[in-house]
Structures are given as structure tokens and as C-alpha cells.
Image 1 (cartoon, rainbow, N blue to C red):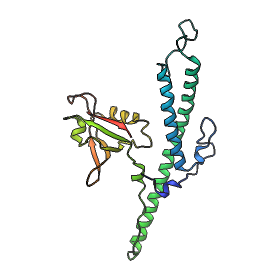
Image 2 (cartoon, one colour):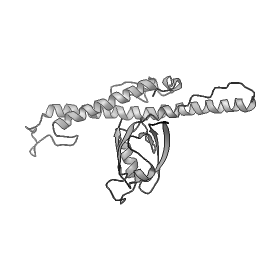
Image 3 (cartoon, one colour):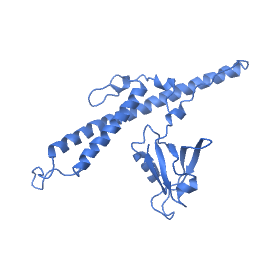
Image 4 (cartoon, one colour):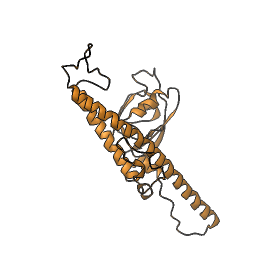
Length: 235
């Protein structure tokens, strides 16, 4: 799904050093589409670096020295340290990118709302204006699907909410394709929402094509594992 022209060209007036990455890159000077591309590139690199650590059977906190302080002979300590350093470096950039995207999206939304309000005022004061064209909506473009439901357990909170296999998630609470962080933020929303309603926006393929908004109530003790009773996989 492409982004509207208003978003493709959107820029925000930010301080010259407010959004610099660890290598000095001024992300604040980039158009929003380039920032999104940077985000996707960083996510891809983080996945590759994580695979490198997994290939050595270590993570970011695995000790690399023996109890007496010598480098472990069973590990390629140099490569692991280099990989960890790179992960830390680009995680910092990722944090900057996500904060900047949020700021820019707020700016785009505010500008779009202002434009819509101005058009409404024009229509109210000039009711005879012919063939008025509404402002192109920005929100649906931001809510690009980012996850798919791979299965739904009978009797689960997911089934009761109306979720079905192959539904594509556009928004899960406040989580969208821009900030889901490989679905880790969806997990956080679920874990912090027991006993509360989470609004889920989704796309359901079929004839006709459906765009739905469901109310999901995560909870333990429904008779199965987890709090949802469904599996979400990233798109």
C-alpha cells in the first residue's frame, strides 16, 4: 500500500542536532519515506546480527570469559564482541528513528486535520461549491497491515472477539506497522491489558473485502495457553 503524496513529501521543522544517529546522520533532515526505509533497513540488519549471535549459541549477555578472566576458547570472542557492538550502535539509531517517525506522523496528522477543518469551513460558508474533492485520508495508509493471524483456537478470547485465520492486523491497540518492533510491542500490549479491551483493526480478504474493528479482551484462564488463543506472525 503506497503512502499519500502528502506523506511522501512531509517534513518537520526540527533542530539541526535533535535527531542525529550514532554516526552523525541527521535523520531529521530526511523526508519521511526515507526515514521509513532507514527503519526497515535497521530492522533487517538487527535480524541478521541476531542470527550471527545465535550461530555461536550466545546472546547479548552471555559471558565471554572464563571464571578466572580469560577469553573463552570455545567461542569466537572477537566476532561476538564486534557483533554486539554493532547491535548496540544500531539499536541507538533505531530508537532515534522511531522517535522521529512518531514526531513526523503527529505533524502530518495535525496538518491533515487542519486541512480537513479548513475545507469543512469553506463548505459551510459556500454550500454551492460544486464537485468539492475531500482531502486524501492519511490514516489508512499509516495503518498498513503488519501481522497475520495464523490460527485461532476455539473458545479463546481471539475467537470470541471475531478474529479468523489469515486476518491481517493493521492496528493492535496503539501498535502499527511503524512501531511494532517485530511484534514485541504487541506482546507488551497483550501482557498489560488483561481485563481491558484492546481495539484491533484488521483487513479480511474475501468477496467483498472487509475492514473490521474488533474488541479483544486478553485474559488468562480461558482454557488454553497464552492470553489470546491465536498466533500472530509478522508480514
